[in-house]
Image (cartoon, rainbow, N blue to C red; front, side):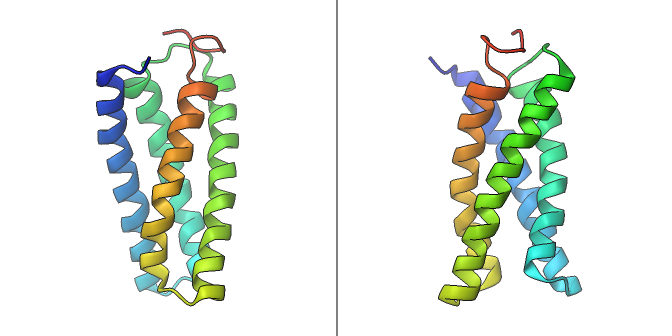
Length: 130
């Protein structure tokens, strides 16, 4: 069963990760980057921040950094591919605004990332020890 503390911390750090991702995405758009490059760079920043905070504060993992970081990166890259495809569909096919599309797609990505991190990356039965 999920702990209240864990969910609360994931909400706080997930919120900060989301703010970092969306804020840097908006900044990159303002600078003039194409929305695919903007989402790539903002995702890279968010992945680094999320791994560090999830490992230390949310899941309090003491497992192998190498194994966890590889699994974390694989999961986040998978979520990134889903996010990018959803953005392409929303912006290029449906004609939605680039920024508002990112906000909507982020909801899906947050859910995917939590489930993957909780049950695959930082799980008690895997390479991490809590």
